[in-house]
Length: 272
Ligand SMILES: [Fe+2]
Ligand SMILES: [Fe+2]
Image: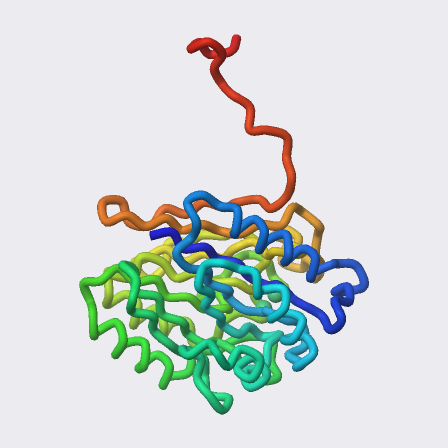
């Protein structure tokens, strides 16, 4: 099973630039073209939050139009820049999304790897939180199938990254989430967004990670007083390849046009 992850799309109304600089709409179109051209094609695409920038209906309309050509099934999760009710209105055909502004927690059962979305957003706040009720909900879902390989996906990562301004808007109550995840070795990964970079850590008996944004990246600055800033490093997405013998192997793909591929060999010999 091939699971693609895109994150932090930050679509603006009328395709406006984010932060007066970033053409998030065109960059998402490039990500969708990249995904559609993949061979093998991903079985699913997870979008791990900050789908739009301010949570307005206008933005979700633009997002819906840009996502429409995407061929694999898509599973959405809100981030701190999203608003659940507007997201649900714009994607009402996504049957797994709850109605009426409820937390976006759901489990997808029909693939070899179970996919469990866990909503970490707190209305009006940049940082996230795992509510106790959500922890119990996750515990119950994992307990239903403790032997099936499972991926949990959230927006806020449950670990400190060392990027200080992002850690200040990190995930509260992460210890409670860790206590649940640690009980279930079937959790192959906790896949997150929010950081606009690829970061991995050993966490709660599994691997937790964040993914690059399809648009701008958060500056890699590990100073304790590093200012909040972004950088136009190449955009990316992640491909999580699951096989029953090897578990999940994660690849970070760079989106863009690059020279190559070029052969290593000519006439059966390594090119000297
Ligand atoms: Fe973001
Ligand atoms: Fe975020």
